[in-house]
Length: 111
Image (spheres, one colour):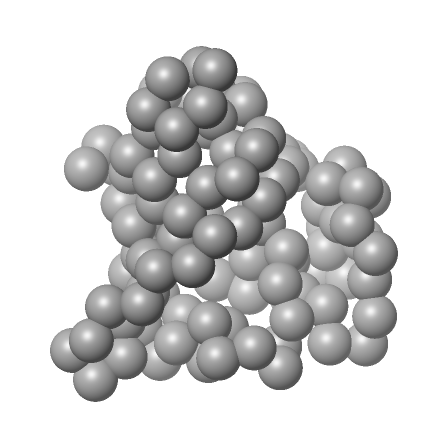
């Protein structure tokens, strides 16, 4: 599975699983973008999900749409580069504010 296939699979509603204190948390998200060969999604630094990712970057993703089912494990990290963050949000057509952060998937592997 290459990054463009992942972005296609994450074009609609998809689910991100994080954990906190050995408790899994699953939430729906939408859209992803590829920037410089990396897959990104957007969130807010104010969300509990972001704090969970910062504590434990290991995540699992599930999407089911017209492309079929897509499930993978990865590590997720906040993007420090403001230009890449802006580009990711523009590609996702999402608004940004001072708390916006692009999160990139690393070490993507099939679940």
